[in-house]
Image (cartoon, rainbow, N blue to C red):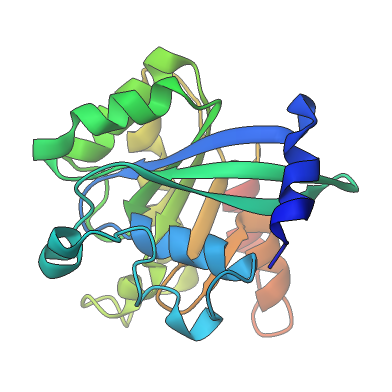
Length: 224
């Protein structure tokens, strides 16, 4: 993990600072996604990501298994050869703590909207998308728990069917925004399984399966 001195040096340059909030419906995997971001930075072991719920540090949050208040952690990442310090704000997904989402969004320039691949756009997902749009944040849609697509009675479905479900989910997210914000082509849709510790854009995923399957239909659909 970067030392405090290293992080301080990065933080001294305003252009290298970013604030990003992670939002979405309850139990769609926001805290697990944040765990993996923290693990990638070396703050916690990868084996604990998705288990420890690093940001839920209050006893009541650990006991109930939900995020009840916005909390933040800083991580270092490299972009275009330059290290940047990103403050990641994990916002609650429960409707009782919805005000925390707006408060978090107001201090951020970007947002990561996490949605369950099977459950899709829910009430708090839509509310979060409305906040993101109202605040004018640059956003990324993370379709999490894609492993559930083959464990929820869909084991017989093929790649094209799974692709159609993902495309429909993106369409619904855009409908909630009232405009086309997310698309596979723009690269701001990420397919992920925080449970298994991986995430990829559509193009990255297509390249990964190239050696194992005929991807022509998959690529054509995701790139359209």
